[in-house]
Length: 156
Image 1 (spheres, one colour):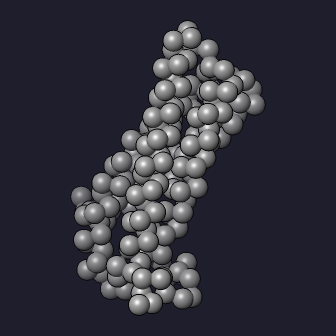
Image 2: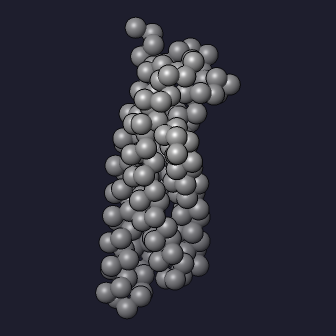
Image 3: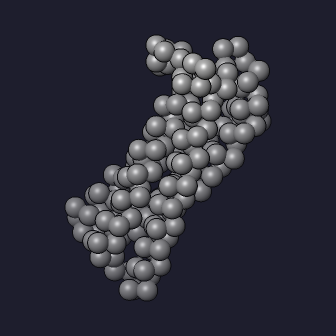
């Protein structure tokens, strides 16, 4: 499989998945449902795992993309930098969710609302960063979403 294709297909899972995860966790809070909260926490763990796959595929995709016309480091670097931050926060959200699952298991499946709320915070931060990463990644090849001025790295 081509590196760019692998990267482009794998990055959509965390971006879309984190949105569904947010919805499920908010629904769990609203309904005070331990079962739904656990589903949301497992989803957060899954999003974290897929984010690692997406990030790991980025380096080889970068090498291949640099050979394409109109693609420069000036467009790739901002995407790569925010992707590193998004990866860290998304992994942290997955770890917090896993801790919430362990906590609920030790309480025989009961998930207090505060635990769901604690999991929701890093998942929300992850969502913001993953969307920002996707927007920066889209600018690499989609000239229609690029800003009118070049990225800061190209100005020098």
